[in-house]
Image: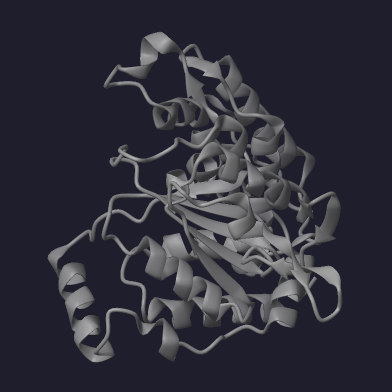
Length: 322
């Protein structure tokens, strides 16, 4: 299978978004892979690191329709899904669609919404459909959610339940700039943009049709039996780890499989290698692990450490080519 066109589109996307985003290019590549899987992305990071701007840049560059919801404690499910309203002219109730009827939904500060509103997203995130007053409506393809949340501010927030966390394909973070040069580059670009929000000037680099074509091509990437065993061993390893009360669900293994295939395609390969799997181990598995009560407060234990130890203890396959 010739993957050169796929790689050219991916490289063009990386170059375009990289003109605005300052930081590790791996963050952009991982976002691209997650979106090609149709998976939902959760950004969990400190305030002011550009989570929302990156989500907006990414959404516009794909050429897909996108909408944004600013979550607050008083937001209701109807504010996201929509509702039926009475139209006197036609003497009937007509659906007023909410912002969820889009391709990419930016859910800003999702943990500020109450549980009732968070649960309204579950059906859409899992089944790509919503039910309003007993009627089910299918969402257009592609559809995925890019959500953000602040991990240090707890006043007025509602932690996402495990069931909803599990529906996010990846949990990612941007982190601080790694050097003073990166900090200076952020300031330089702000001077050139003459605005805090450069998204309006960004042109899409992939059409919606090509984006869906790329999603379909990901499903053609070859996966050797040894890679399937590698992924399965890692997922089971998180359940068998002594510090984990709850390990990764089977959905974690499916996430690793999808992400590794997408990354192989983005890199121009038509088969998965072990490095594709290892690259996404933390993003796909960390948020699916619940530590035992006795390990929750230990400084030398976290879900990230659990995944690190599982990675070290899992034999890497040597035969994985078609």
